[in-house]
Length: 274
Ligand SMILES: [Zn+2]
Image (tube, rainbow, N blue to C red; front, side, top):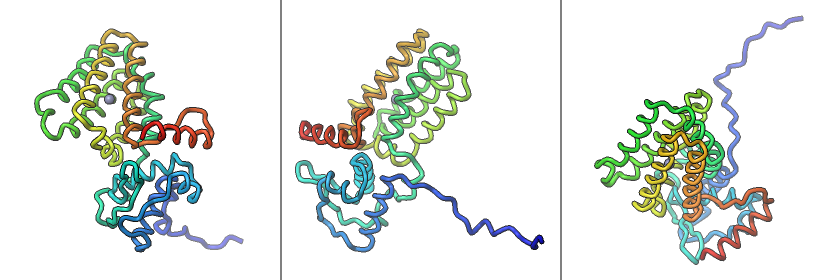
């Protein structure tokens, strides 16, 4: 017997989003702050202890702390530890929603390091005079006079995104272009941009080094030297990653290590660092 039926009202259903671990940590902190469980000046336990209590890796915890710091909810005092600022989550500039939609800078730079050197070498082999001209124009735009004003960081980040996208376009391969378009949009999200403007990252000296590295990539593509293009792109992204690690913006994870190894590595890094 067939019963008369109608479809369930679909507007009642909301999409299931699997939330990243670091965002779940951030959310828990925000909830506790909003409930008034935490007060200004309270100190967070050492990372190892906090990670154990939350049942997360120290890498995820480090990412969460970076976000909380960018949101202005915690601050790190060198040599003393991490403290709650006492700000309410509602008062901060970056809402959890705006951060939730993106990927963490840590996974973005990992993916870029893996993929972009190959894209650059492919671009060196397939570039046309027209695509070379476009890449050059982007670099000229970033370095033109108006980039020397106070919004240098903004222009650089926009120019940087465009530069790397134009390299992918020079491959004339629609799949490689689509992959780079994903990076392009991730590099436009709040978390990445905030990080790029982070004081210890966005100094004139850093930008100037990046200009030079961009020129080296361009030159290799101009010379149709695939190997040099890959090498220069890799060196550029490795330096970006190194700056992020040094500024404590992303965790330092050595390849092929288990969690315990990571913890040991991080603590030895820290001992050497401070
Ligand atoms: Zn770049």
